[in-house]
Length: 155
Length: 155
DNA sequence: ATGAGTGCAAAGGCTTTGCATTAGG
DNA sequence: CCTAATGCAAAGCCTTTGCACTCAT
Image 1 (tube, each protein chain N blue to C red):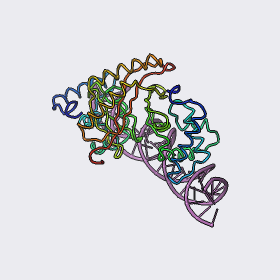
Image 2: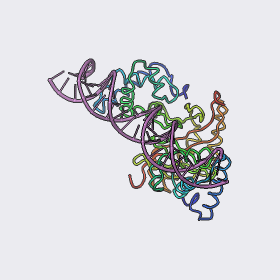
Image 3: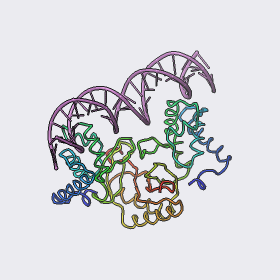
Image 4: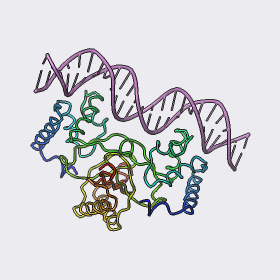
């Protein structure tokens, strides 16, 4: 959640932009102003953002640039696109940059909020993953846990 | 998963169609042939189906009818639409008809497979939900747990 | 007859792409 | 200079909607 995973000061922002630039460069691409602006937007938020929300914050950026650069950032492993209940693309920083967390989604307005699971639960999830892997033959690489509910505003 | 939650014989299929018909009727709507065909398709599969997959199975059904009837089935609580991993709408039977389960998703080919979590994990999830609800003020109604990995075919 | 359901086609809404222009290395 | 990136507009794709026709009660 925000207190834990983001807002750790501007120093970390610089570090993160550096890591982002590195990953983008690894694809022979440039860490341009708009890409930096996108990362900044994701960094400021404590929840996944829709394209519309991102564009609202980064005034003047054309939609096509946002989509294209977000795609690049995802390919570079800087960002991640997640599915939502309302079929709107939502973006957040990659887990290894923002920290592992889960989402709480309002089934009414679709808004997502980040939250961290307890260590015990995480352990149980990893253990369950191991079991399912053994049962199915899948090679499991991660998990996604979302809680559905109604936010205070919608309830 | 398939062995546990589906394929329990034709008797159960009849029971399920009955339940579906009842729920649709509760909305003053009819359990028509195409709606029955949709439920049949979902019942046969041991995983969520895309519209395309459903249409392939129910030959001759127009897309618009599939969408409209799937919407009705969702409203009636017979089916459920899943947030598409790849922005493709995927449908499955409602949890109280098919049983509570989770999904294993192949990050390579996108296919979803059902699986059941252990009772212990389910308890841990419910407990975690309670905690998060208390912390955030959300009214939590359920959870979604997905494992990501590579299926045997893709690995 | 009366309202629900169906099918076709057209419209919507989010996302991607083509192409000429600009900018970074 | 040369390739990547940008911006605008047009095209794509899944999904929804309008409308006239058919069907069940």
